[in-house]
Length: 134
Image 1 (cartoon, rainbow, N blue to C red):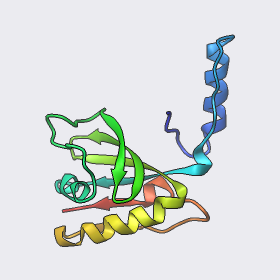
Image 2 (image 1 turned 135 degrees about the horizontal axis):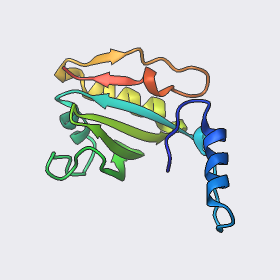
Image 3 (image 1 turned 180 degrees about the horizontal axis):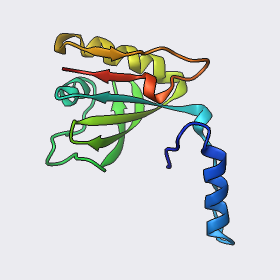
Image 4 (image 1 turned 120 degrees about the vertical axis):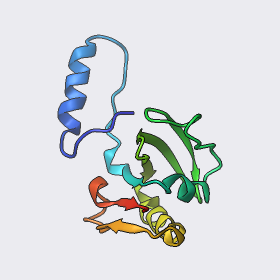
């Protein structure tokens, strides 16, 4: 799975096809069915642990690691970006609002700061879904 900047999916997919030549492969743009929610801050692990069975301790789950799991009732691909820690949650678009609201509710006790969590059209845009605990 490749995460691309908005509006670059087609160009990146074509460049990948061109570079792989005659290899038997399939490159499929699934961006219309997925969205990314970012949660970051020193208490992000605790918020995620409320609904996730993965061991997210830094010695097991660190920047560059990813895994598919469930958070609450949503299937997600979770990827740690950096040591902030910052996590990207790739979720089906149909579950994005549910998961964003679940995260917001779960983070209330930690003093949640929501970074402009507004849907735009049918998708939640990546940079507008930052949930940050302080």
